[in-house]
Amino acid sequence: MAKAKKENELRLVRVFDAPAKLIWEVWTDEKHVGHWWGPRGFSITTKSKDVRPGGKWIYTMHGPDGVDYPNITTYYEVEKYSKLVYDHGANENQEALFRVTVTFEEFKGKTVMDMTMALATPEAAKEIAKFIKAAGGNATWDRLGEYLEEQQKQKDVFIINRSFKTDQKTLFEMWTNPEHLSKWMGPAGATMDYINVAIKEGSSAHYKLTTPDGDFHFGKMDYKKIRPHEFIQYVQSFSDEKGNLVKPGFAPTWPDQMLTTVVFTDEGDGETRLALSWEVFGDATEIERKTFHDAKAGMTGGWSGSFDKLESLLKN
Image (cartoon, rainbow, N blue to C red; front, top):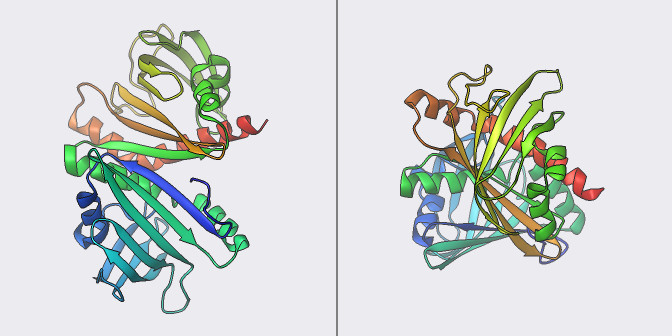
């Protein structure tokens, strides 16, 4: 999340590899919005969606725990393909939580989504920010990115973004300095030890990851492209102790190789956003691709645990 314009505002900026017209359609057409709106694990049922000034979107969010969350969104400004202003969080029993202004600006086939959430007070903004993080609300925009990839390229990808209070160079070094990487990579409570490592294009890292309960597995990262402070791409796979490709015992239908792409963006004011995408690399069976697709909620938890560790490390 980028720095707020005012103390009572939260601001979020995302760049999507899609034209503004398509993004507008998947935002405003109920046949699309149900595929990506809400945190991972949530689904929605739309009763009606009238996208015009004064119109309302009446829908219910269904949580993975079976709890329903009724919502009534009221639109105030609608500028086709470029701007929406609406209230969020209202229902028949409560007023809206905040006012949203979101703009879409296209440049060379990509679109910048710039969203501001205005609350009554700075204190309310801080509380909502904590709530959004705890509820996984920002995964909504990761799901939007995934859905756009599916619509345009018929690609099944996993996307996760996170902003860190550090400069771009420092965050990049946390991914490319083995001493730093080993301290935070892996789910919460896991530890990483290198068998051998060389983080540069054409080289690889061979490691052992140990879980809190003492189980362990080996893996490899084969580095394909590295652009200092901006971009890292590598192929990740499970291996044996000698570095040979193997299937993990806990997931025998997991794809053999995953392509990981990490992009670092300076958001200003001492913050850097990390955008990570994960997709099946090379040949894979239908069941392997389904295993990947069905595991996205778990991936969110795993990567979030790693990013929490990274965030704590940056504070020290």
